[in-house]
Length: 144
Image (tube, rainbow, N blue to C red; front, side):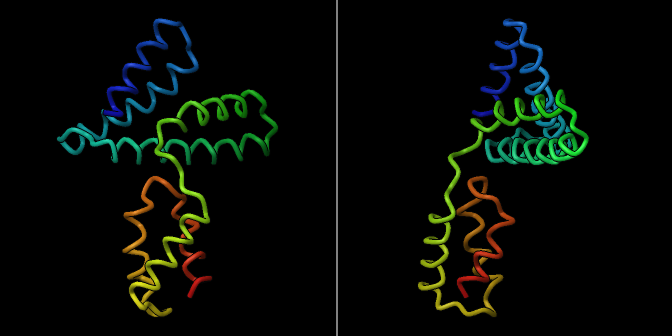
């Protein structure tokens, strides 16, 4: 499981005395533990992926803010964390792949512009964790 891999990598980073890696992985592992305590169940790989996506999104927002302030230390720290966490995510789909999937869904379902919600329901599970969800809506609109 992804959870065990993160924990193992955190321990390896501690042994190597890599503070920066330890801090990033410790933050993710704390989020995982928090989820498990709140939900009173073990987390799945999908849950871990959602937590990592959330962390990367927050890091990107912090990075934008740091760039506005020209804070080189924070920029470097944010880029390091994003590069460290990205390999834990599943392979990302390209826009071309998602467009092809959308065209297939629209063709098979005989959807019109009124059925946008149904198209979204059908595509979201297929791209979950593999594509930026905020880009899907405009893509669907352009195809209808």
